Amino acid sequence: MRFRDCPGIVSFGVAGGLAPQLRSGTCVIGSAILSGSNRMPTYQKWSRQLLQTFPDAVSGMILGVTAPVSDPRDKRALHLNTGAIAVDMESHVVATVGAAHGLPVAAMRVITDPAERALPASAVAAMRSNGTTNIGAMIRAAVMRPREIPALFQTAVDALAARATLVRGRRLLGPGLLLVNSLEGDPVTAKEPYLGPAIQTATMEGV
Image (tube, rainbow, N blue to C red; front, side):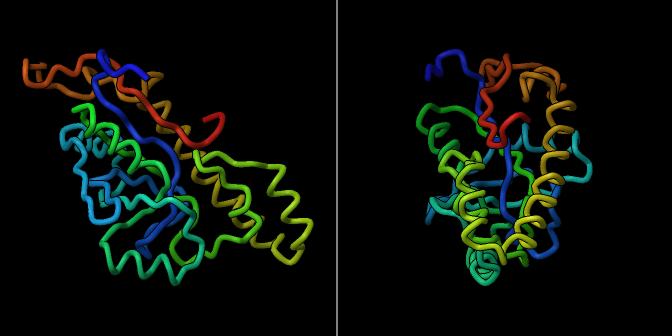
């Protein structure tokens, strides 16, 4: 991927809830992205504008991990130990790439599974490392674990709520996801040469 003409990167997709007050469908605007002990700030001006665009969104730190966090006890421990309110498997990668290329980064993630909800093994088995869903793997896992079907149905309901928020977000932000000149009323200066649509990294198919 070439970044020479890229004004910045936006991590746009779903996340698991760590803070207990976040319901499925809640929009989280990342105040920072945490990966291990590395805390990477997001671009404050973009984050403020995103919060103004989505009045019902909440601001907080997003934790990046390499594997799904499915147990409510693990979610609670991560929230208490890190202060993060949401967790995903992509935002820390986006922030690392942004830092490596000197690009501003923003994160807009929508909660799928709340902190108190355990993800069924069938749902975890369907998660690809890029955040998309392997439906075939989910069906095979559900056949092997029929007792999980009610929990899997609840997971699907949560995912629909998250998808509705993501679709609304795409509609409000436009096809470029983050058209900087439309979000920022301030004139662009030589120190802030962010003139075009930011690269997006979406993680829910068909959004």
